[in-house]
Amino acid sequence: MANYAFIDWKDNADILDDAPSVYYPVVCEGRSEEDILRMEEENALPHGWEYMDYEEFLVERRKLMSAKIKTAYEKLKGNV
Image 1 (cartoon, rainbow, N blue to C red):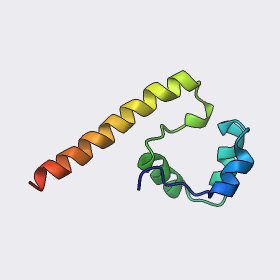
Image 2: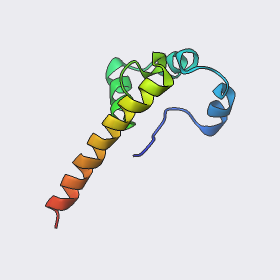
Image 3: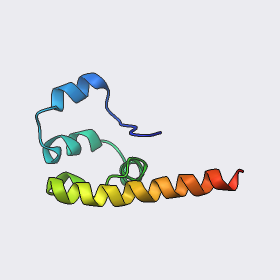
């Protein structure tokens, strides 16, 4: 489910030059708060990422991605 997105490649090309603070609210339109939070969690996106400075975003996302990798590793380790 890595990098699952609610948009397809054509839509992605249309928003390519827009800031996340511009396109993310459009992507989220019509979606429940629960769906949005789930999508952010599945993609290791810190809540509010669309307004973060890029460097801050990278630091916070690395933390979330590390936690996801650790969780997956622990699951795999348990299956041995």
